[in-house]
Image (cartoon, rainbow, N blue to C red):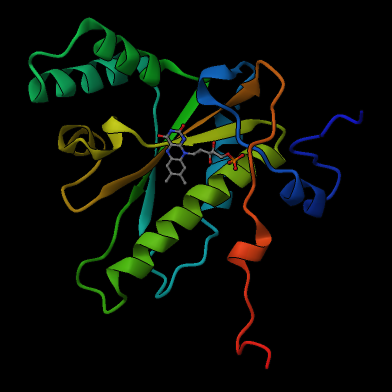
Length: 196
Ligand SMILES: Cc1cc2nc3c(=O)[nH]c(=O)nc-3n(C[C@H](O)[C@H](O)[C@H](O)COP(=O)(O)O)c2cc1C
């Protein structure tokens, strides 16, 4: 049986065709150093963006203790009866993988470019950050979850008009990646107009 190769950097096409996220909890060192992170973010900033608004921002998380405290405190403020296990799982969320970049959707509210288009661009920027991580030999994982919709977490990382598009965890897979089911192409691809 031939083993599937994931994130095969041999050519741009093989990389795209074999792209596979890492599970953030399984990502270990080595992670990117500061210069590599800067390079990844520079690549992510090269994203389609109607109107040249750059409607996204990147927050590099340098202190995981502080992030854990922020998320756990926000959760406790919202749910004072939270069980220890819930708080532990949020603490673990904050500490995954060697590197973490939070991508914020940061739309211009005065532009004529629709908000929807600006938010799509933030998703694309997040995807490009993942691609850059994989192209540089790392693996990334894009998570949202409770912290991404907490106004208190958002306020600490960004401004009131911004939204957390994703927590992008980056490192090296600590265990082999495995394939996940991929969509049935016949269901998602159609031609228009329909043949006779
Ligand atoms: C906006 C967004 C949010 C996501 N949030 C989570 C999440 O909170 N938890 C999770 O297990 N996967 C989440 N995922 C899915 C993973 O990032 C990943 O895409 C998925 O495991 C598929 O793997 P692949 O990237 O190799 O296709 C999210 C994906 C997107 C696009």
